[in-house]
Image (cartoon, rainbow, N blue to C red):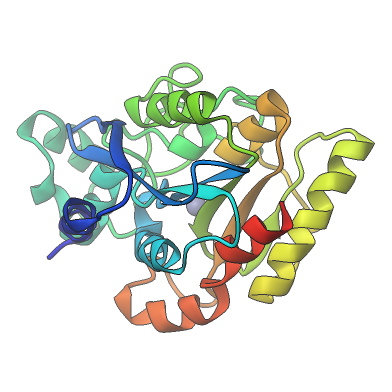
Length: 270
Ligand SMILES: [Zn+2]
């Protein structure tokens, strides 16, 4: 079973509140599953927006089982299903329409390091928050770091934006690999940063990962949440940097030992 089939099967059997928030470029469904109560502060927690970081989708399933201390959370386990499958299964997972184009971008046909979606846009630099000013940004289709033709040009980022605007979460979490660090800053003013740092420290205590000291991102989901919604938003990089991309299923027990309480602990602190 590939990761999309695994998440789809979990979704079908899930008894709680759930919905599809949109579709990927290749028409795969993007799922949202709710845990906890509809009352009280809500968290949106999204995983695997970067293709090669698909192992985080499996962390999502554990967060659903663990639940929250208070309020509720919407879990979006697999934000970039096309990219995840491209990493896991290669070009055969693509429709003919896009296969040749992506093979031309990735000449050796090895997609294990692919970060982008099926349009070769990096979804986590496609948000409307200082778009195009990140230091690693790329201006043409690529396996990684391409900002897209305009902000929020992709169906996956549009779905995440619309869902977030509709649910009005108190905070958001974004799960990535790797580096074992927590990012929480994006041009906040003093009081907003103080508020967000308190919660970042809760996540640091829960996971044992330190807060990042250098932050140079732009156009990310976390960046957009902080700037446009003025809410605390965190990117958590799981897994040690010395491991090569992509982390596979064998990394999961170690990742879970650090991350399994993070959503629960954040909900308690809100
Ligand atoms: Zn990432």
